Amino acid sequence: MLLALWASEVVGQDERLEIADLQIEGVRSVDESQLRAAIQTRARSWWPWGQKRYFERDVFDADLKRIAEFYRERGYPDARVVQSDVQRHGDEVSVRIVAEEGNPLRVASLDFTGFDAIAPSRVQAIRERAPLKPGHPLATEALRQTAQMAADTLGDAGYAYARIEIRQTRLEPERVAVEFRAEPGELGYFGPIEIVGNPSVEDEVIRRQLVYLPGQPFRVSALRESERRLSQLGMFQSAAIEVVVPEPRTPEVSTRITLKEGDLNQFTYSFGYDSEKQVYGDALWRHLNFLGGGRSTTTRGRWSSIDRGGEALFHQPYLFSPRLSLQLGGGAWQVDEPVYTVLSAGGTASLIYTPGRSNRVSTTYLHQFEQNRVRDEVLADDPSRALFAGLGLSPFDGQQDGVLAAIRLDADRDTTIEALSPRAGYRTSIRVEKAGGWLPGVFAYRNLFTSGSYYHAAGPVTLAGRVQFGTIDADLEGEIPFSRRYFLGGAETLRGWGRFEVSPLSPAGVPVGGRTLLVANGEIRTPLLRAVSSVLFVDAGNVWADTWELHLDNLRSNIGAGARVATPFGLVRVDVGYQLTPVQDLRVEGESQDRRWRVHVSLGQVF
Image 1 (spheres, rainbow, N blue to C red):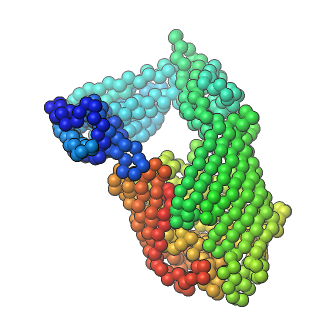
Image 2 (cartoon, rainbow, N blue to C red):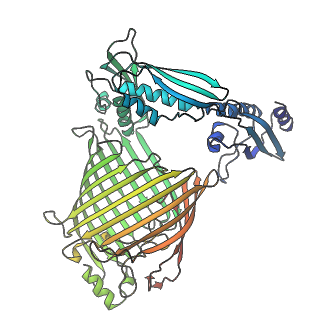
């Protein structure tokens, strides 16, 4: 307290002094970033246009108490702030806080009693999955989550009104025995359903997302799955389903669905820069509950040095089933790649099936007019002209056009939690596409592409890996659209090269694409500062000319390092890759490419 009084003498009551720096020392056993987020005294943003932060004495004094409370909630009852300094430098202050953690209060034993109504294996599952473990600090949140897990297990067995009493017995000064005592009550079944907070969205739209009906045995997992499906509609800021507890309690379990509608007309835009797209911009307008029934429309436009154009989508949820939906789309795009350009216009129709939280399967019919054209400098000599003529392009202007009609099957599984920068779980996807045969159009091919990513947290470090494979087959080379041929290189694949610089070469040294692709990426992601992390990476892969052609002794590889910086505009990525196995005689835009390193700037993680 004397230190806090000293700080008040340095900073006057009515002065507005910017916080230039905030240091918290002595933090060893908890996540410092979470501790900083729990207090309101914060340093100004390092970002030039970031939010300014000013020192407030009352807030600072309250934060000193919040730090001690933060530790107590994590099982450190003796933690306290032993020193706090506020140093003034003109119109700024530097703040220093020193914490003393003390010894934690640890869990000596964990007992579950009164759970005879369920199988012993389910009680054992609670023990194994519970965040509270013997030997761990007695954290308040872990205690609450374990009790909730026990109640949910009983609820999933049909006991809607189960109660969990937590008893703590101090065995030693720093050890405590924890007992979760259950009162299951009687079995229940679903009864009336009340819906509140949906002035614009029809009750029927909400009811069809539910996975339970009146009369069915009560299951708490049905409530959680129904909440997830309601959130997926995108029309609600929040969706919560709770059990209405009557007095006296009856086997018929009433539920109340409480919703908070969001803005049903959403307009978003973004702009940025990366080393491949240069300056780019996106704009998106989405209308939710279009014509009622939970339908939505989306209109999107983009402009960049690589692609520009627009599309419109219509989404019809609940097509005969909550798991099945229909999506129709149409648009026109121009794509400018280093080797070729594409003009396309057409539409798609997709049936989307979502059998579970992590899985998605879709069938799409694609019908569009497509014009491919290789750049003039690619047709530099007669051997190159003959090569591209064999690939179905005109030897005079390098053009290939026609109607592309294809059926596409996609299957995806994603077990990750953090979508933008995962630390655990995996993602897999497979796509099979067929054009020609009984379908209209001039192109005829079969295409397979699959991808898998895996993430593992090792303390603060994240190990991430990805493998991609693709192959395309056709009876005649010219029946494959040139834009469907495979290329590697750039910020998303082989970072030691520029975009589309790795593939079979023409006689003039120009990448011409191939029929088979294999690429693997590995990263070690390490946090450095609050908003900065580092990445070490290795990439390896190649593109081969023929279908199903793989030569693992002929892979192009690179190593590199990068930085990730969290900004108000997103995660900025900077990578520098160095080629270990250069491509001999490579030429891009008429110039020889002898430089063995590349720099890439973009947004978001590579995978």
